[in-house]
Image 1: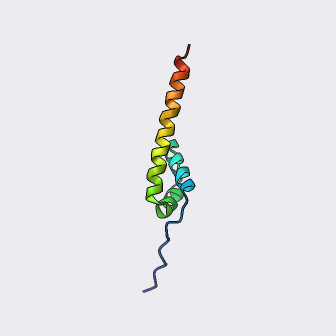
Image 2: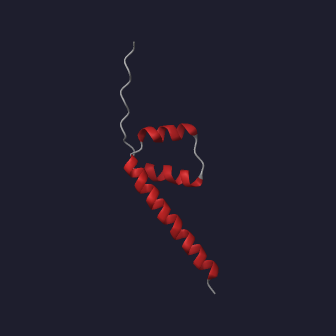
Length: 71
């Protein structure tokens, strides 16, 4: 039996996590990019990026509603 390749370490930055979360919110993601992210992203970064993305999304919605109902 052959030797197994060494396991890839999680080395992605917070910016890479933000990018992955943005594409997830947008709903467009290639399978190979998803697989690469699943292998390399730090789960804590993904959670923080998701929370930050949700806060930004809610803030934009509130801003749009205020602009729409402003007289």
